Length: 338
Image 1 (cartoon, rainbow, N blue to C red):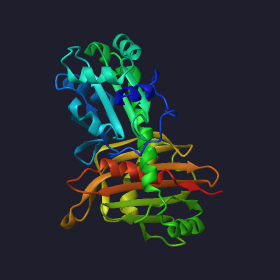
Image 2 (image 1 turned 45 degrees about the horizontal axis):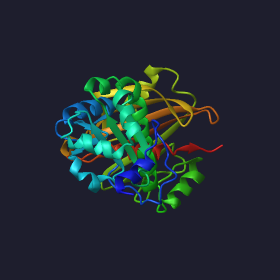
Image 3 (image 1 turned 180 degrees about the vertical axis):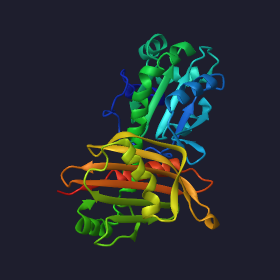
Image 4 (image 1 turned 30 degrees about the vertical axis):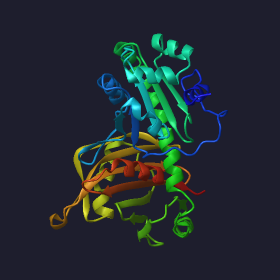
C-alpha cells in the first residue's frame, strides 16, 4: 500500500470527521496562525480569493493584522508540509498538467473526487497526517462552484480552525508551568480564579483593593481586573462611559483611542456581557507607546457585582494577533467562586 492509498483510508466522505482508525501519529507542526495552502500557480488567485472571504477576522493594532496568514506552496512540497497543523490542498483548473489537480486526485478516493467535482467541493478532516491537525481539500471544477459555497461554509470552516487554535494554544499556554502560587493568592484574597501561565506576575494587588493588575514581558502584556458592587451594565451608554474612563482610573498612564473602537453585546462565561476593543496609547508623550486592547464587562447576579476584565499588548513592529488571541484564552478562564 503506497502513501497516498494510506491517506485515502483516512479521508472519509463527510464534511468533517474525527479519525480514529489510523495508526498513531506524532503531533502536528507549525504556528497557530499559519495555514499552509498547497495548490498550483494557476489556481492560486481563485483559491486566495475564496480563503480571504472565509478567514475575515482582523486585529487592528493599529495596523490591520489577519488572524491567519495564508502560506502558499507548490504541490511538489506536499510531502514536506503534510504534517503541518493546518493544511489546505486545492485544485480548480481541470487540466491534467495541473500539478494541484493531480495531487488532489491522488489524495481523494475516486468516488469522493467525482462527488466533490459535481457537488460540495470542500472536505475537512482531522488528524489525516498528524495528531492535532485540520486537513482541508478543495476540489472544484469551476470557480463559480467554489464561490457558491462561501455563505454556507464560512462560519463552519472558521469554527473548525478556531477550535483547533483553542485546543493547541490552551495546551501550550496552560501546561504544567503555571503560576499556581499567584492563582491561589487571588482565589483566597478576592474570591475568583484565573489560570495564570508561567512568566506572569502581579504588578498591583492589595487585599482591600477592587483592582488586580497582572503583567509579563517579552512581549509586554497586561491584564487588569476590577469590580464594583451592583449592576453597571444595564445600558450601552453607561457601559461605554465605564470602559472609556477605565484605563486612566486604573492604569493611570494610558487611555483608549477612538480609532477602530467598538463595543457590542456578547457572552462571557455564561453571563450577558459587553465586549469593547480598540487601540490604547500612553498619555505621557515622552514615552509614546500603544497597541490593541480588549475588555469584557459583565454583571454577576450571585455576587451582585460588575466585573471589568481588560487585556492589552505592546509589541511594536511585530505580529500581535496571536498574542491577543492567547490573552483572550487566559481571561476566559476567569471564574467567580460561590
